[in-house]
Length: 523
Image (cartoon, rainbow, N blue to C red; front, side, top):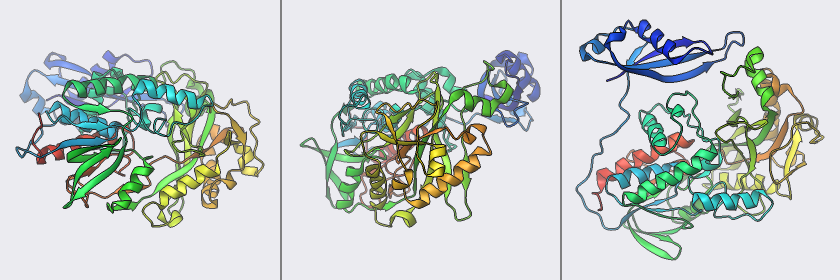
């Protein structure tokens, strides 16, 4: 079992070989004992701008297993198991396993099931990646919105039009498994090493297609432009899934529908499936020039070719619990139109793998809870929708930070807006509740003391960002099935159990494993 040697300092230009030698020396491991070694993880320490360096972890596999076990070093640990051995039931069930949604949760749930002989039927309301790109492009260029295939819906889910971040707060060995599968399907190998890995929207579009093909080759089926319209229930179970005028008998139904599937939430509420409103966040996208972000983070090192493109994460919490924070920061990226309903405006952020655009953007969002919007199951949906409707017009509402703070919106700045459908000056206080705009003001002041670029009052803000996470949670048991229906499995971001590509993918895998415990393979 390989060892990991942690906390190895590396200078910006230091070679991998030098770092590995440092690691082995730190652990007291002779080079002659090593069969295989390499860099396991790399992160950047830029806390002190006059001392920016990398922190590495090194893995080492030794010839003598007894020697491995005898290593005594506080910075050494064993690599956790990143695979799984499913517990597979022998109990047959009538009908198919149906998965609604082909984002990260539905995709990895379907992949694991298909590779173990379960032949899942996957329903995706949006188009395949190639067709979806064309539909999104038409909308960004000023055309009409396809409410079924857009930035929120389609192959790969909302993450397909994002930065493709693979960071997560969950500490689960399956995260490594997900990264390795992404590499298998075409992601760059560096995602296995970097502490803040990303794939980029350009790579994601190819990867999701490769995963889809693997599922089909393994006996699964993927249907695009196929929305889950209804479910038929009987005796505490889902008996049929209804889609495009078809009815499919279901042995199990996985709801991996994503955080924007508002019509699905409404359908489930009508069926009296137990759900709860949950906190989420709303706010704006802020754009700075990437060079200003780099200078704020790296100071005199800003042009050093060994440093990654600068990215940040900022937060501020008041005593009353309300929080303002940056979210989904996209270095060298674009602010993109992300609506999924007519007569609304929604923004999101996107970067390609190179992250080489002139601007950086991030969401600056404020936490909201049922205390702000009500305790009804769908009150959070209505709250976000109202903001999006308030923002509706030919162009997206925008203003400089200066215009927002002084109540005189303007877009007079040398930062070129990247929102393709165009922006127009707008008073954000006409779009958001006062609690949100007051907290945005407070947050901008706090952040300006942490990063110089946030003190630039010509930074450009575009509104609104409302799709940070699901406004509902479809309540489930410890076995991952709904508390209302024993063969119904809420899963991923839309169900309220994940926040990003990695955690959604892991939730999809774990949901598949629970289904496998109950139902025998269907091949």
